Length: 152
Image 1 (cartoon, rainbow, N blue to C red):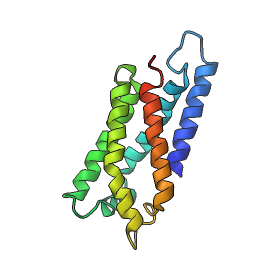
Image 2: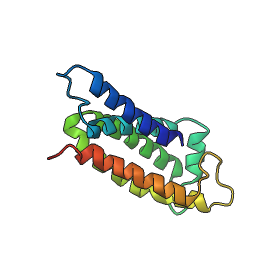
Image 3: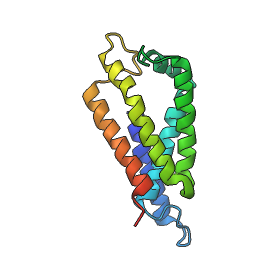
């Protein structure tokens, strides 16, 4: 839930700053730009979680067993999330970062399916598949808005 709240609050705060900031400051002058900031905040949160126990340990536990080197995969995805967050904040790379993060979310979703089916999933990762799928669709939608919402 904190991930969803981070996305929403980050987006709303960025848009408020865009509305109240100086007229010449166009960095946050639209909803897609504000969503990019909210999404970046979300990915900083989730990216850092890949390196901090107990969340790191829990993420390693939900990597499907058919995949090699779960700890390395968690490290790699954490780095990619952090790099993607930075890319969302830099306008020339925003669309590429949004595409990369959307692809990463799709590729990581099987771990969520696996966690939902685990009889003893780690508490921090235990979530029902239906709500998690709805969240994921929302995150993908945010990536599309952030990356392509401002293109005319």
